[in-house]
View 1 (cartoon, rainbow, N blue to C red):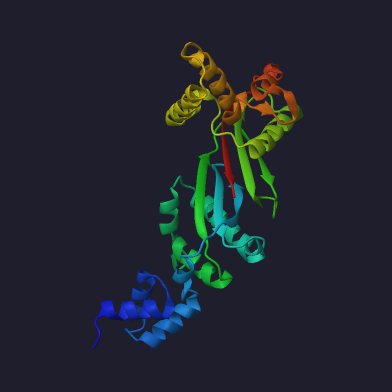
View 2: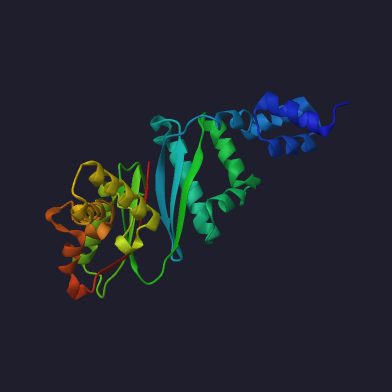
Length: 283
C-alpha cells in the first residue's frame, strides 16, 4: 500500500494541482486517488498548477475605496482577450472588494493566505486559473489609509469605471476643494500615467539610482574626450536633465510644455495646493 507522500505525488502528476490541495483532497476522500481527482476537478483545481509556469504579461489593474482605505491591485493574465472578459473583471472586482471588507493593511503575500470561502485567496486564484484556462498572477497590491489629504485618480485604457491598463493615484492637500483643484489633480494624474515619474522630487529619489546615473554619465563624459576641468559642470547639466525626466515636480507638464509641474502648481498657491505622494500601477 502506498504511503501518503507517494499518493500526493501521484495525484499531483494526474491533476497538476498543488501539494496542499492534493493532500487535503486525499484526506477528504480516504486516500482514494480517483475520487480525489474528481474532487479536485469539481473545485477547478486540477491542472491549475501546470498553467502557473506560463508567462502572464497581460491583465488589468483596479482601484477600490471605502472610508478607511484605498486599494490598487494588479492581476496578470496570459492574454489581453482574457483580461477583457467579464469572468476576469468580476474576479478582479471580487478581490478588490474582499480587501475592502477585510479592511486591514496587508502585504501581497499575506493577502494570498487569507481565508476565502472554503479555502484561501490563493485557492481562489487556482480555481480561476482552471476556469479561465490561463495563468493568473497577483502582481501588485497597494493599500493606503484614507487620511485628511484628498485623493484623485485616472484610469487609462479602461475596461470598467474602476479597472484599466494603467491607474495613477495622487494624494494632495488644499485649503478648498474647488472645481479648479479637482481639475488640476485630475490632469496631474493623467500626466503621471503618461510620463511615469519614479519619485515626487529629487530628495525622494532612491540614492542608489542617483549614484548609478552619476557614474554612467561621468564615464560617458570622460570617454567623449572632454577636458577634466569641465567634467563636473557638464555632469551637473546631465543630472539636471535626468531629474527633469524621472521626478514629478521637475517634469515638463504634458498640457503645458513651457512649464514644469512645480511651476504649474505655483498658480494654485492661494489654495495652498501641495502634492504629498503618488502611486502608479500599470501593465
